[in-house]
Image 1 (cartoon, rainbow, N blue to C red):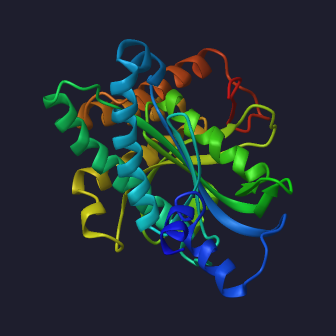
Image 2: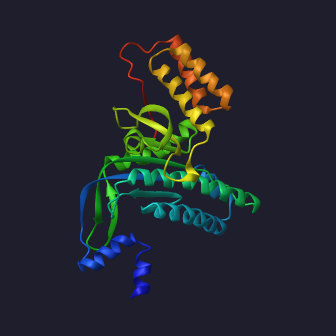
Image 3: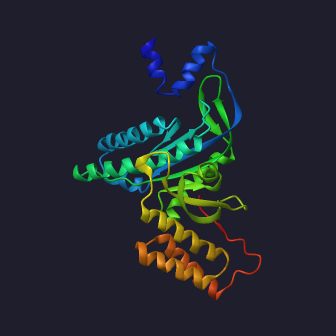
Length: 298
């Protein structure tokens, strides 16, 4: 029975297994509304990797990747919802309540990127494909619980906020970033997070824009995640130029983004804003401009 319970814990959250045993009740369909933080990760260019690497070796390689990232997420009190190919869907704050669910999700994301850097050095030496992962994080109310049928259930989350978190992972492609968090998440980790504003975006299917940020580092939570002086200065300068852009002070914004390039090296997001500013100089957006960038792809 002990072995069976350990095995069962590999399919559903172990804390949920313990709760079911303690209550001695049958698992039933049902959920409740709760504020959680969702984390979605995906490997960039995985289709290309899968086409050029032997399937048996790829499975071992991907399993090592998923093992490492999963251990980090679980250590930060996260729940793995499911694996979708090379993607990970996870959330913090359930089944065990966690008032710091947003901070734990952010810590997990930064630790995953750090660990992946180490793994890529090892894999390069072993002549294995190096992997780049993108992560999207969003906090909000969702339905969490046992979903499915009487024959098969899945402890999972549902709701519009889940979809938004998944979309933010893909937005990394536009900005050439690795971790994007929403403004809702930033509100919950503001005392810890070092971020730079990226944009105000309306994901496909939505008209209302949300502010998104690149998560750079965390203060006061883990000594290995603290920012360098360069990172703090970079975030501060980028925010200044970003504000000038939204105030439609195009020339000043261009100078600000160019200074960022000169001080910190090539930055794709700064380059993108320089191009936007030059376009708006030629064709002003008008008095009703809200600064929202509407995404046409998922």
